Length: 139
Ligand code: HEC
Image (cartoon, rainbow, N blue to C red; front, side, top):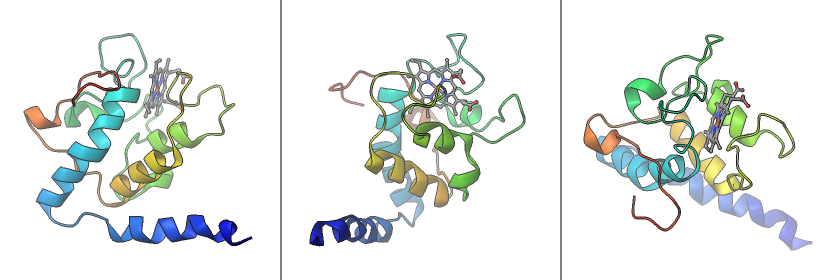
């Protein structure tokens, strides 16, 4: 019985970890967001392959609108961010992302939601440039 309440306990500490300063936001992006995008999304969403508009290889490309004029990433509003709806669609949805046999974990989705809620900080320059990585590679 008590197990049913455990997930709530994990959510509270996660929320209190929301980054605050620019340095903390940069650290959060580099250690949490970037590795997930590089490992799970960049193989396709890199602007090279003829995969749809979303190109996650830099801040400038990632914040462009979709063909239908929607935000992939709307800072402050994960529920209106197409990227979030794509990764958290039920596992059977034909447009579920990533388009591979592995879905993101609840923790990874929660992390992306928090990142967007907190303003979706994405550094400029070389550190903000993303490339495809396989698991195990150092980001
Ligand atoms: C194996 C290739 C592949 C991977 C990996 C992949 N995608 Fe996609 N993605 C696609 C293709 C193809 C489309 C367009 C066709 C479609 O909508 O199904 C797409 C479409 C999308 C869209 C637009 C969906 C919509 O509703 O219009 C979003 C947002 C998206 N991907 C996000 C992501 C994110 C975030 C990741 C990583 C967690 C990811 N994708 C990983 C191939 C991929």
